Image 1: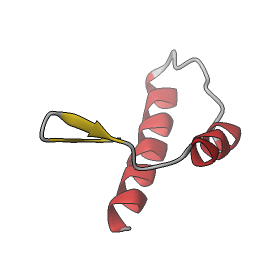
Image 2 (image 1 turned 60 degrees about the vertical axis):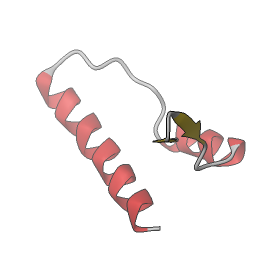
Image 3 (image 1 turned 120 degrees about the horizontal axis):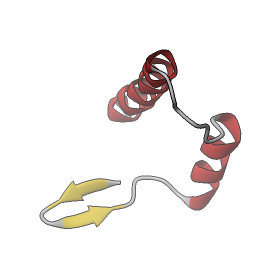
Image 4 (image 1 turned 180 degrees about the vertical axis):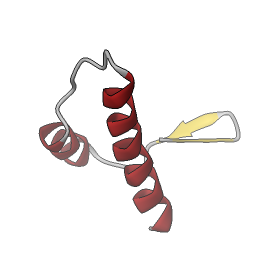
Length: 52
């Protein structure tokens, strides 16, 4: 989702979100190294979506 002019605009559909959850299942982040791994994944997703 992107916030634009005070409104949130959805940039994906429900199937895209489901596919994302299947690929990256939510996990407990309880160490710095797990946090860094998760952060790298999120940054990669954000970078890829900003190129489209």
